[in-house]
Length: 131
Image 1 (cartoon, helix red, strand yellow):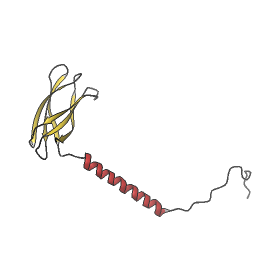
Image 2: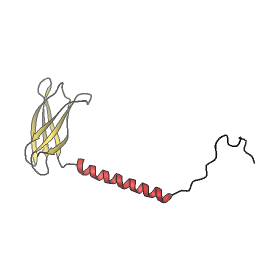
Image 3: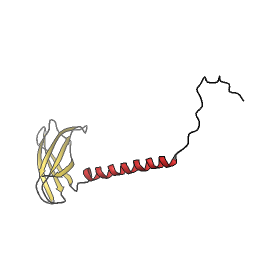
Image 4: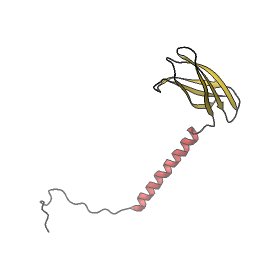
């Protein structure tokens, strides 16, 4: 049976290529192992730190100031610092400050935070040991 198209007009047909399932399997395994190594490295560096901050009270202290009372459970009992982030009604960050936390395994801290406008929420995303 002859082709309805003129020969050579649309290029030539490719020959079927030989498959290499072993090469594909090795590349997939190497990629998964590399991703696992990166995951373990990032988790050990940025994973759970053992610090457990909890905001207890948020009280207005004027038009733009707020008093935050929070408690931090620390694994070693040493001094630490915590990042406080104030958010407005639209959950946009309006202020951030690192607050020192004295030594002790469970420490309550009260801090007066100044912001450009009234914060509706204060989060503590992370705490870290000082020094």
